[in-house]
Image (cartoon, rainbow, N blue to C red):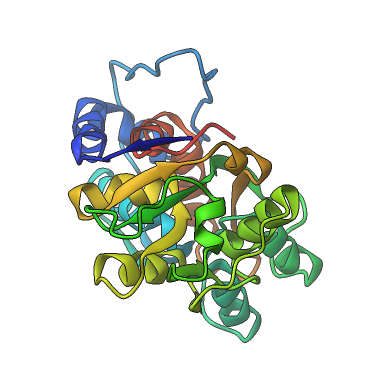
Amino acid sequence: MSIRIRGTNRIRTAGVVVLAVSAAVALAACSTPAAHVPASSAPSAPSTPTASTLSGSITVFAAASLKATFTELAAEFEKANPDVDIALNFAGSSDLVTQITEGAPADVFASADEKNMAKLTDAGLVDAGAPVDFATNVLEIAVPPTNPAGITSFADLAKPDVKTVVCAPQVPCGSATVAVEQATGVTLTPVSEESSVTDVLGKVTSGEADAGLVYVTDVTAAGDAVLGITFPESSEAVNTYPIAPVAATGNPDVAQAFVDFITGDVGQYVLEAAGFGKP
């Protein structure tokens, strides 16, 4: 167990990284898939970017924990492809699955876990062979900067006088919470269960909760607004993030190009800088 205050340096790093490799974006965004590199290698920008021939618009449905990184990456993708427009819809992965199942016009789906992606592949709304894992994430405890409840461990969240907020079980961060509870034998009694990890973080930053279980990346993105408390039991629930074009997309070329961009050099740089792990 350790306690650390997350600053904004890593998020600034993400922006710097994207600028540094902007020459690679056009090549990564073309219809030819971006090259993948080993985790131990630093991606390098090609010397002669290829002009993009992509055009049209797509709507990307992405897990709430991807908001900062996907907003940045979508802007970079559009910059390299002036004739492309990307609309972003962020929510809990389970809510996004419900929206797509009910006919919402999505072209790409990025889930915070494999379980919710499987719901769409099982329903034939995403081709079974299409999803690609692009990141991992683990839980971290977020508390107000002064840590008024004196939280130092996962077990502290179960104390009766601690107002703890978690994600609902059907949401990936909630499913991860349940997995940690089962692994540790610690049962939480949260004051609320939220539909997305950003809602949990909002309860903490507003002072409505003493602690919330969010992802490492959410603590990083929150900067000085919260204090992050790591706990070793988080390794019991590592979430893997898959991404895929939706089968009914009206613009399959752009949808696939965006998937390739996220899984390629620039996407992986930005995700890693934001605190995501390798898939």
